[in-house]
Length: 363
Image 1 (tube, rainbow, N blue to C red):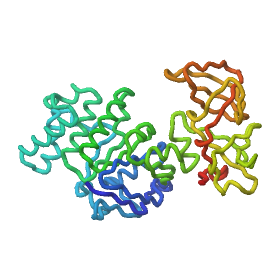
Image 2: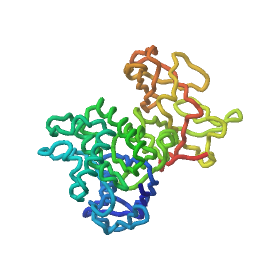
Image 3: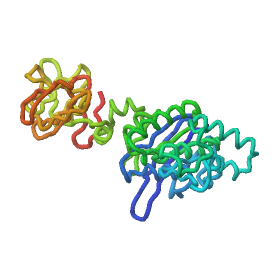
């Protein structure tokens, strides 16, 4: 295991800047997820750590070593790619020990490491098969096994589950989490799937346009997004946003929006928002909004656009003023399109942001 330090990384392709002065500290034994939309620079960052990209500027340290000028083979890393990259003409066993043979390790050591990896990944009964005889999930396990037998200081994964179907991805996420708990290897995992990021990562580094916009635990990023972009990218459905004005009323603070005053929890309004014209952006998750069939104190009138049954609950799309919001409701809550409902927002779960910059306003 080893910590990874990224210092002011910069990488350009012609006029396109893929990474902009990126700095990040990845702790020893940590599972860190690089998350973001396509083209945000996450794979370029991973490839730079691996030594597959030459940086324009910056330094990369693995442990106490500056590996910036070193080729991939001297960095103490192993990588699992989006494509399984297994050799079709080799048995599973030969695929797993391929790197060990290149290092000329004794045959007995190769067999021991292969057996340990196969046991961890539950593919011990597949060692004599060829890749064509395996399912997609089994081939992915072979690729992971080939990486971990190398005993790398750092394990890098580039969207390794994206080619699998939904049920198999769910199973493999649990397998990867279990594997990391047992190996405790420093792992950097790239994905655009925020469900994968939330379920796998000890921390998430969310990227946009070649920069990191927030680094924190999955729970903190979900509950306290640093910007509107973070709130709208993390969560399914994502965070809702309403334009409003912060006002003092009856000794408390409310956000006036769509003809209603939404109360805030005590101490929930940052001083930065309590000045000027009071304009704020109110953010709240769909599960923190209660749908009501009759008005209540502090509720907001809304018009139902569509109701989607999704098993244990219903997902409502409602219109508040000119904004469309997503609201989760119990499975027995029924409302027809065009019908009026009322929304009660949990005051403790409201997050306020600057309407111009989109940055969170902290209390």
